[in-house]
Image (tube, rainbow, N blue to C red; front, side, top):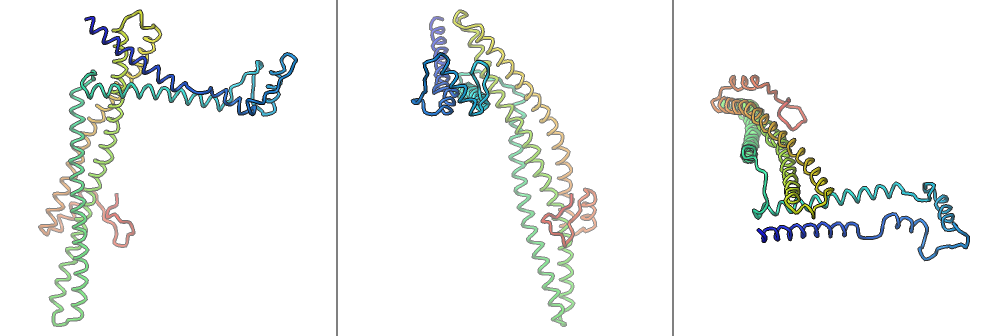
Length: 336
């Protein structure tokens, strides 16, 4: 037990020394107000003095008045630029200490030395979502590749139909043969454009689901994971203070640590609730969207390759898909 207390006290002192060194580094250097006064009054080596009492204060006030710098009755002043600089310095200090604590917590978790708050059910759902996004991204990539290849097929059929039409005019002896081949290619192009419309609608919806809806939930999860790390860092901090010797832990330090812990706990619990809600609604929305899109893709593909133009047109009407007109300048085939 004595060895355990000695090790704990050594770790605690090392942490306090590290934080104190960090404070010394941030506080090191000339005071900003002194620097400002030096710049305003010129070179520090050229100081005018006078024999009568109060001359130094009077000279300083006159100089400041000429420069238009506000001052109070006591002759002291704090320019707005200095206030902004001090505020920024405090922000940097807070960020530095917070980053140090979180980095220390992360390293402790990596080496299995620090305790970590784990919600097994939520963590499982998060991992499932991340894996699902990767698999949906693969489906999206393959669907886009298929759509691109099929678009080239339709363009080739269109060019072939035009070539048949031209030859039917120039070869009277083969006019009938060229004509019905031209008509076949034109029908294939017409049906192909309908299928392309369905395929583009499918890829557009999967893209929205994968790269917008899921990504929005994953962004909330990222914020939740960062809040969890901060929460554990400050939780371990206050636990260490509470377990340490009472006589060496100032009351104000313990109170400050408790307040910071409560703030990070509130933030962490709020984000955990947000993640749970978003995961639930995402899953419900995903099932509805994919049910509709998979049915569309199946019906449109089956109708096209069985030559059922009526069923193909009915599929687009069923899902309210409208094709772009032929003279449209927009690259998309769809009107949402």
